[in-house]
Length: 109
Image (spheres, rainbow, N blue to C red):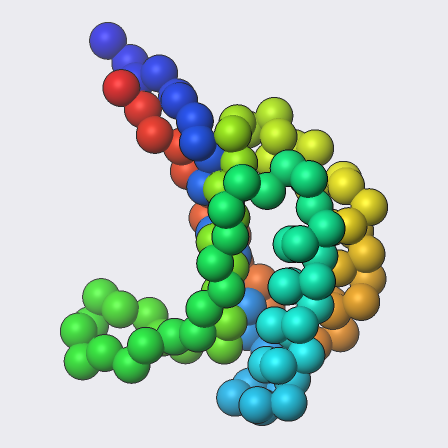
């Protein structure tokens, strides 16, 4: 029997800044993320965070800022990708980052 995907949908994004470790650029990206997240209708929950240093080899702390967003479903996340609030965020903030990595997941049973 294969697993059946079930909501919620988790969208996890890691940002590496062009000016890595710049407090000013980190604050700019944080403000842009916070602004669009409060305006976007598809987002159920969100968390903006920074890396925690760790001695454990399995922990990757090389990013500058992370975003975790939950949606009711993959369909809502698909709508979010083309939502004007998300597109405006990318337009306003993409100059800040050098690299973005996304990990999407859903529960299964």
